[in-house]
Image (cartoon, rainbow, N blue to C red; front, side, top):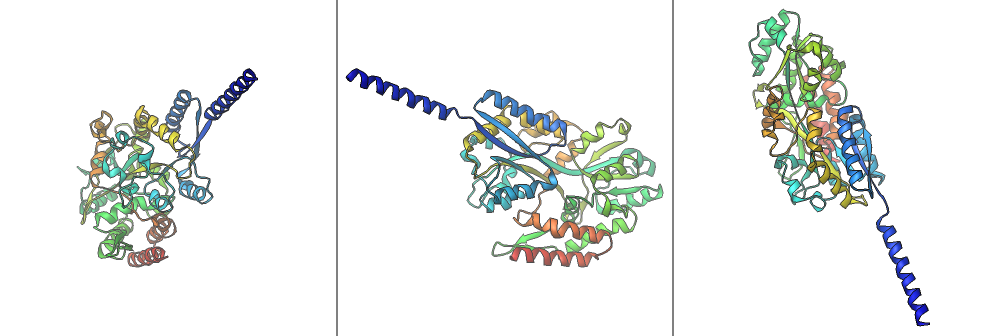
Length: 417
């Protein structure tokens, strides 16, 4: 009898161990929502990293979910509200501020090492850090919007340097008009109209919004500085320095105008350097330069996108393990270089890539770089009011003064809700 009992206990123990092993070895699938899917070279880096990680971690499978920029915010918002958020989410610019208020993210320091966090410049965490100093994400790819110009058209017009002030911009515009060319074209249609207007606002010394004494966001759009920016922006069109057609021009149209030789300067994200370098017909005809300053000083749009582990993820430890792998095994650097942008790491400025003379002005301009306002309702404001308002003003449907007044009212009404 004793022998039978021992045998039964042994069998029970084996069964228990078998069940425990089966549970421990149950495969895990992590979803990684990534804004992309349209640039093969970028996607190849992501896919290579996922394949390598999956091979090294046979119990974990990373499943990428590719979405486009136009739907990125709304798709993640819907997923959070529907409690179907991915395990890892890459987001644009300041979107994370809104989702931090919704408690959508896990504290990143709980799942990745402090060594990884310390590789980034502190500014990279500005919009991902709460009032208590808790960080809820990591910098992804960083970019500066800057000046790309046609050297051949500058020579033809007799302009010996890229304008460094608003006054010089106007003077150069007159010389371009003399050879029947536009001085400048910016995107004023599509998804990111504000990206091209904001630098003018900051260069005038203006702001979209400021915090009041109570710490609440209030509009600063109806200020003399904001009006100066709006009037200057419209003047560039009214006096023929920018085409009147820009309300209908997305960035692809701007790029086409530039490469066709109709426009001498385009304000663009630094990833466009790689695009121009791939066009044989453009060789020797273009260069980059630092952005000009306005009456309020120099300013450029510059910020990192962000990546997060979501609060609802059932596999936060494994998500942190993948992020450690991606950043530490060279895929992050490869991704930023392939994308033609830069990392927010402390040692990036000393990298060989950062010494590229075409990239140098953009990297230098990051020192005067500004991010979109860190208000959780900015995304709603820009989509519903700011971008359509700039378009209406440029089209002549709003005066600069009316534009500024309407933006103030819209912003404050939205933030009073």
